Length: 81
Image 1 (cartoon, rainbow, N blue to C red):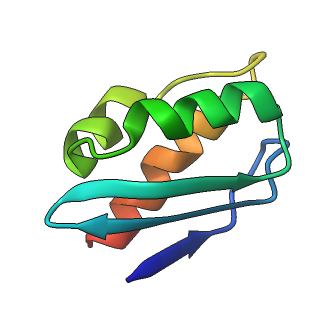
Image 2 (image 1 turned 180 degrees about the vertical axis):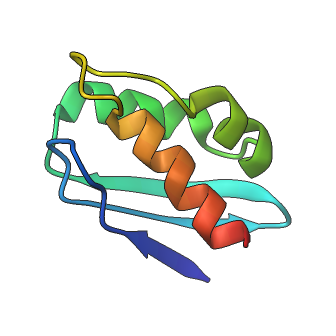
């Protein structure tokens, strides 16, 4: 199943991904810092969704109190609950 999430407080306008057997797949960000977000997508591919959620939550970008990585953690949490 494909999950979509609208992030808040960041440059990215959307996050979508799939979770199969507890693993993240095909993470895509719409807009934002393209190089960094492509790197995040590659790094989390096939990784345990809960572990990635815990690893990325609370990551801050420029004092915003959140980041695209943190918003991915929020998206995973919503998808798992």
